[in-house]
Structure formats: structure tokens, C-alpha cells
Image (cartoon, rainbow, N blue to C red; front, side, top):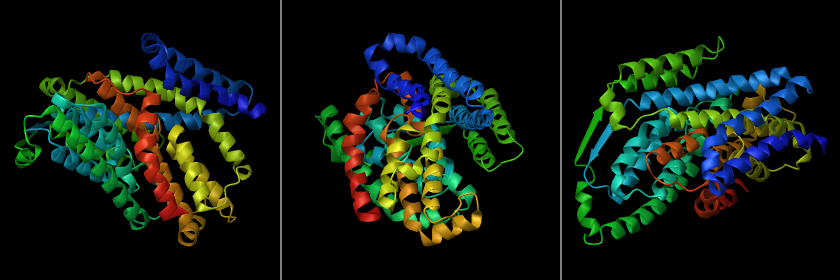
Length: 421
């Protein structure tokens, strides 16, 4: 029972993120930073003063620095690229845009693709932008899209570093990725068509399909080279913080050299990344006891089959960072076969012999990241950018009950039934 007490700050922060913007928005916007720092400080003090686990704190801090350096650099560099899409914002064009975003998420990562595309997506839909436009962007570009390569999403990248072959992911997950992408794009097209007809009730929607994209312009396209530099730096492991230093240096170059007109077109400011940085320092630090409890007590969870690991990984990835969740449950599932996640030969044996477990954990860690705003890093970033663009986004609870539970969970159950069970 005493082991649960250190988890309380994490639960408190999640509840605050979920309910305070709804209960008292003014108080929340003025004090969310203080609350995040205080709760993080409580857990850090406990680990340093009582648990004598300074190494765990240091390791978590390094992970946070890596996480926020990547998000910050992608945020700044993508803010230096302005897409201009001329013509009507039709359901066809939006659907194609999301499909392309989901595909390139495997090249730039979900974070890179999201930061590159969210502003032009918002701008092109300015006249009829609704929350569902952003929600499906989060579903597809920020999460499900990046399932086919280790670059696509952090859990898969960690698996690659542990020994999972690079092309194993696309070989084993292409089928479930394709079906899920088709499902989400079809549902989005139907909803967007209804919205389009409602906002253009004096026009016939089919007559607009000719003008999906009348004109496409890019300003600041040299920043694409800097995006590739950031993605390339992800593979640098040593010395410590060299990778992050390169990312921040690239961000500084981009911000300094990008013409002011591009930032003005993108309505660029640092407030969204500040909000993400503040809240996620709280999340990273307060979730340490939760992850430790999960790791040490995994044998008591009764997880045996790939289906068990699918749901355990999915539920935890919805509220915890999906990267450490992936590693902890991979370690637990390999432990069932007396294999060690830290030994590459064991990982290769597990991938070859017990692939159903790896498929379950990989799919769940990526897909269920879309269930909440905090399930994956770019989710909250996209929400913040949307909020600052003037769109009133659903709060934490509304997002879950109006969108993810209704749209995602039924299909995730079908994935479990046909691919995992």
C-alpha cells in the first residue's frame, strides 16, 4: 500500500490536466506551471532524500531533455516553413492531406510531421475549421501514421535500439496500419463532407472536387534541410547531450535566418512549446513511481497472452509516456520466456519466435497514444497550437468521451479480435 503513495502526485497532475481547464480555466492558465513544478519537485525530493535513487532522477531528466529538445527544434524549424494551399478546403483535399501526413510521419516521425503540417492544415481550413479537423489530425498524423518505421514513433525507435530489425516493423504491421488508416480516413471524409455541405449549403460538393488544389506555394523551404538534420541527429547516442545540442543549434539557426514574414504568416510564437515543456516536466518526473511500480510488479499483473499485453500496453500508453511503457512491457513479456531485453540475441530470438507479443505491444503503444492529449508528445503540442490559433478545442475529458472512445476504441477492439487475440 505504501508503494502507491509516491504515485499520488502523478494522478493529481493527470486529474488537474483533465478537469481544471474545465472547472476554472482562468486559474489553470495562470497556475498550471506552478502546479507542474510543485508536483514534480515533491517526487524528485522523495527520490533524492528518501528513496536514494538519484540515478533514476538523472536518467528521467536526460529523457526529458531529449524529448523537449526534439519537440522544440521541430517546432521552431517547422515554424519557418509556410505552406500556402489555394482553393476551397474540400473533404477530398483534407482527406488526401491527412493521408499524406500519415505516410510522411514514417519519415519525419509523428512529431516532425505534425509540426510541419499542422499550421498549413489549420490555415487551409480557416473558414470552416472545427475541432474534429484537429482531432483526426491527432489520430492520423500524430499517432497511427507513424507505425511503419522505427523513426515513426519513439517506442518503435527504442525497440530498434534494443535490437528489433529496422524493417521488421513494416513487414509485420503494414496490414493493421493500412486498415486503420483507411478506417480513419473514411470516417473523417464522411464527417467532413457533412460539415462541408452544412457550411456550403448553396453549392453541390461534387462540383468542387475539380479544385482540390488550385495552387501550392512554399516559403522558407530551405528549412527542410534543417528538418533532415534534426531527424538525422536522432541516431546520435554518444556523447551525452550532443544530439540535443545539435537539435537546439539547428533550431537557433532556423529562427535567426527565417524571414519575419514567414513567422508572421504562421502566427508563430513560443507559448505553445512553453506550455508543453512545463506540463511534461511535471509528467516525466511524477510518472517515475508509476513506471517503477509497473516494472517491479509486472509479474503480479497476470499478463500472459499477447492479447493481455495489447490491452495493458494500450491502457498505459494512453496516460503514461508510450516509450517507457513499451520498454517495460517488452521486458515483462520477454521475461515470460526467460529472455533479457538488454541482450540483442535474446531480442532477435523473441522477435522471431514470439512475434505476436511484439506486434501486440508495438501496435498498442503507437495506436493508443491517440486516446488522450498526453498519450503522445505531439498530441498536446497540436492542441496548444490549435488553441492559440483561436479554435476552442475540447478539454481532456471531452476529447476522450466524445472522440477517442467513440471513434478509436471500437476499431481497436476489432484489431484485438482479428490480429491479436
